Length: 469
Image (spheres, helix red, strand yellow):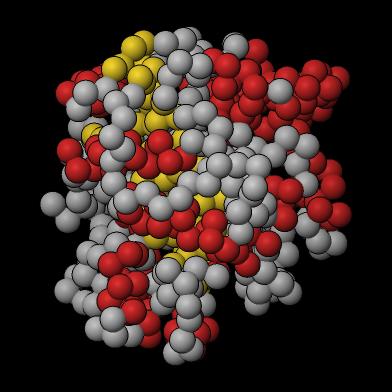
C-alpha cells in the first residue's frame, strides 16, 4: 500500500463533531442514535481496509442496541473498546493468536462503568500482543496504519482505537495505559489522551490482579471537552473517595502555574530535534500565557529503567507461564510472538531481582510526588523521537535489538504508570512527514483537574491541526 493520508470525514450526520456534539444532537432529536451508528459503520467500512484497526466488528448488534433508548452523557455515541477487556458476547484476544476466540460471558468491571455513559459499541479495536509493544504490529498479520501517513506506526498499545478516532470513524474510543499505551498512540495520531490517577476508575479485571497496578483505563479523544466530560461522567457513576473529585471542568483555570520542563530522559539518549522543537515551542507558549516554566530533573532515579523493564518482563513471564490459569484453559503459549517470548526470557534471567524491583515500584508514588513538590505540572515529550516507521518496532525484530529500540523510544511515559500519577498528551506539532508529535503534561496524584485546565487553555490558544486540512 502506497503511503498516504486516510480519513473518513464526510458530510454525514457525524460530520466532524466530537462526542459531546453528537450526544447533544441525539439528545435534541436532531439525529438518532441509529443514524449515528450507521454513519460510523459506513466510515469504518470505507477506511478500515487501509488502516486495519478493527479486531471485532459487531455492527448488527450495535444497530439493534442503538434503537433502544439509553441514558448517560454520551448516550448513542458510537465507539470501539480495545480488545483486552471483556465485552459480553465478544471474544477477547489481547492481540494474540495464543488466546481463545470464545465470546466473553460478562462485561469487565471497567466496561460496566464505561457502558453506563450510554455509548453504542461497534466492536473492538486492535492492539499489539498483550499490549507489550509501542506499535500495533503483529506477527503474520498486516499492521495497523497511521491515518496521517500510512507508512508509519499508529503507536501502541491502544493503536487501533487511536487510528479509528484520528481518521474520523468514531469521535472517541477506549484505551488503557500500562506504560504509555493511551498517551503514545494519542501522540502518534494527533489526539488527546489522558492516563488517570491510579484508582480513579473501577479497575479492569486484569489490572486488579497486578502486584503493582500500573494499568489505567481511559479514553482517546479529539477534543478536550470530551476528555473532561468523560472524567466527570465516570465519577457520577462511581467515585473513589480516597481521591479528590475531578469535578466538571469546562475551561482553563485562572491560576498561573509553575511548570517543570524535562526535555531529555534518564536513558542518556537525546530527544530528537523535531520533538525537541515541539517541546520548546510548547514551553514558550505556556510562558506567553503567563505561566512560569523552569527546567527540572527527571522525577525518577536511573534505577527506574531497570525496575520497569524487569516488571515488563515479569508480565510477559506470567502470561507465558500461567496463561491457562489467568486467561483460559485453551491458551497456547507456543503461539506467542517472538517479542513476548523474549520478554519472558529476559525476566527469567533476572528473576532474583524481583523483590527489590517490586519494593521500589510500590513506593514510587511518594517519591514521584516529592519530586514534583513546588511544581503544578511537568512538561515533557511523550516519545524520545518522532513516530517510527512501520517495521522498526515489529515483534519479529531480533529481541535484543527491538528491546534496545523500545528503551530509546518509550522513555518518558512509564514513570506515571509506576507512580500512579495522571498525565495527558496533547497534539502540539508534526514531523516533516506530516505525522503528529505530542507533548505530555504530568501532575501529582489526583490532579487531573489541573491537566484538563492546561489542556483547555492550550486548545483555545493554539487549536489542533486537522487531518482534513
